[in-house]
Amino acid sequence: MPESQTDSIVEEKRTSAGRKKVSWTKKKIIAVSAFVLIVIISIAVLVLTFIDKTFLFTIVKDYFILPLLEIGFWAYIVFLGIMILQSLIVPIPSELILLSGGMIFGLWPGVIIGTVGSLLSGLVTYYLSNKGGRPILEATGEYVGFADRFILFMDIWIEKWGIWAIIVGRAVPIIMFDPVSYAAGISNLKWKQYTLATFIGSIPRAIFYSFFGVQLLDGHSPDYIASLSPEQFEAAAGQFNLIFYIIFGVLIIMLALASFLSKRMTKESEKDKIQEKES
Image: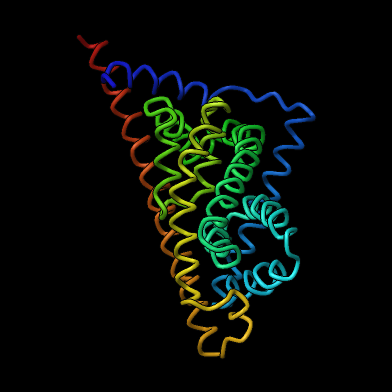
């Protein structure tokens, strides 16, 4: 993208991102309240993962894998519902759910149900972010610099790369799925483009984690995890935590990078305008 065009986008988005007055309709207040509640719950779950190292694996094993093994065909329906619920509680990565899908259903059924679940959960988070997350950032952007810079970067990122930004964000396994959904909603990407990109990008992601889940069973049946010894359980929990920390670490780096780059673009745009006035 030419520098002059980038500067114009920076100025335009900067005006709309954190400087305009937000109209608080009843529908928007409800969406914002839901978004704030999700953030609070997410933070609480994140804290628990640090307090109890086996927390994530215990939740996945006792309340997800083992119960689904007992309900037959209905496991597919419940799996989709849990993926949607998971998308609202950010610190429990969808990647762990996809991995569990491979353990429960096998490779290719896990890929299919994982792709469908990813699409549904992605649409839910996109809607909530677009209706609830963006108004918060727009209302606080003038007072919270990070919020202003974040929404600016998301707008420019999506505007520059379009659906490819979503496809790559979905397809790369270590990039956390749900923040990409929220970012797309914040950026006001059209939902049809978002849906197509999410579907395409979710396929290789589902293949990767479903295959990994099958490998974790090491040739055993899924109910094998019910008979794990304390040492085996701790080892399995460590593998789940490792995946979580890698994905969460990449997320922190991405947020920091987004803030840095957007701040830099804003400064360069302001500097160019000063030089133009002086000349």
